[in-house]
Length: 324
Image (cartoon, rainbow, N blue to C red; front, top):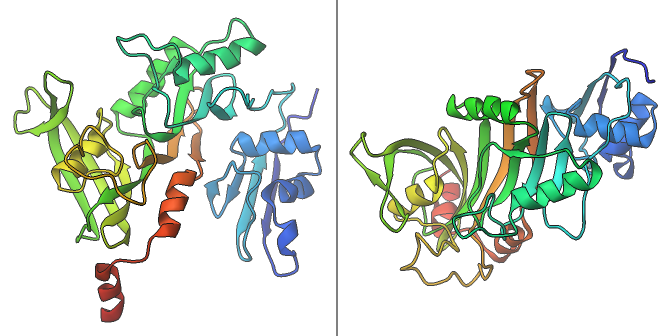
């Protein structure tokens, strides 16, 4: 049995700590003076904050001036950490007795469609869980479209899944996405607000009819403009199917790689990937059992990194800098 006394530590990164020693995992182990595996559990359990935000990336290297805060209560029993099965593309980034947070790859559907696909995120996740505990099962809380990557949360019971869905229905979760879209968006910030309906081919579109449409609100901020594309940060106030894809397409800026809503566009020469240029970067939720606020952040996909490195800022960007 381990002690259940809370351990609270703080540290500001100074110039006296050499860069090779600023790996978050090593700093946490130094502060807690606990075995490495237990320190990794503390990081993955959300007990470590960097600059007042929970950070679950043990491999992250910190910068001079960054603050670490640890508020960790060692569990009375050993808790199994995330399991990464190299044969399966779904990566578990956090897990406890109530929820599982995964990084969804762009190649998989979240759940099967009427075509009854045998490989989906939920099927792969359940396969991974049941290899350890045959009675364990994950239940869907929300979804990401096929072709979209990023953070997803699943619950370990029907009741907990319902509690989590209630959070999403109440617009509580904080969801941030990164997207690459065709063309240059002129406004630095904006909001799309419409009602989304579905046609006979399952395409989504905006309508003025509040009776048939679902209210959908999407906020965005321009991160970088290029000659023929824009990198945007997106926040969802609601979570409707295809919401981000439809709103940007209807504004004349469909997402790169979106074969459904950008059919009339030539493939972008710097986006050869057979996926949509949309990534669920962060997710903030309240734990369905403890009520604790939790925040998860994923890395940008390699396809995004390759695209951004291939680009130079567009004329609109350079003009703004000259005016300053």
